[in-house]
Image 1 (cartoon, rainbow, N blue to C red):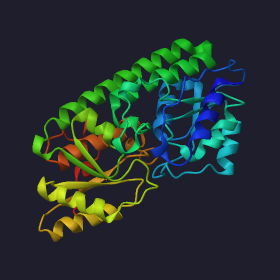
Image 2: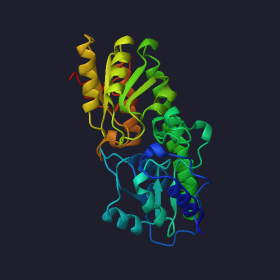
Image 3: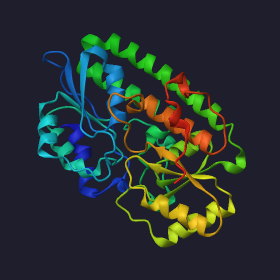
Length: 338
């Protein structure tokens, strides 16, 4: 039995639902057999962040088709018939793992019988994965929010493509090294920019707990209205707790997310204002999905550049015009005063 299928089957039998059930996969996937088709290799990626890894490492030898686009919540997404056909027609499949794509588990299990199905987070050192107190035994899947940690997934993609297509191993190695160098520079930008926020202002309040890795990487106190999965509903008690936090810590801005409805954040703003605390929506962050295809924010680097730059400025820090590399539009740094 394909080792990928074995551990996927065990995982699926034990777990179901959204990414709150994000246990660590056991073992690592192995690519069985070498590519025999015509180039470019047809690679399928579940979410944009994974697609970016494969595009950069694969280069001209790989064409990436992405299942979930901008604004799509992977916690709630169910594979359609078209998605299943797309995966069946592909040569190799990459997904994030840690149960981010929980509702697609059955589809991934079935496809792993026939072709390589790779979780890009599978080889990460467990010491670098976060295990929230409320979900003991399960890991937070939002690893891409820590650029340095996500950079480790480049090597998983590189290994998988090199095993599948050894003829272009040298190219995959060069591409992987070049992309990791870019990610290292982006991570340093994040450290430098967010370090300009005063310690008293380092509170990041968002729609759901997608930013814990971001907080760990850049020394921010992160609070989410909802839990790890957007399937959960925020209760009145949680909203009241966060309103008290906003007032007591003099939080100046809260943030909506591109793939999550903003009603809970609006409730926080109204609650804080009812206690005579002036607060604004600092802007829209990208959490579980990147920006629109074809835009700078529709790339992983652009997504994190946007988040880092927006958070820095909204919380009182200083970031250069245009953000990392000068590609952000001026409005990217402006908050939403609603």
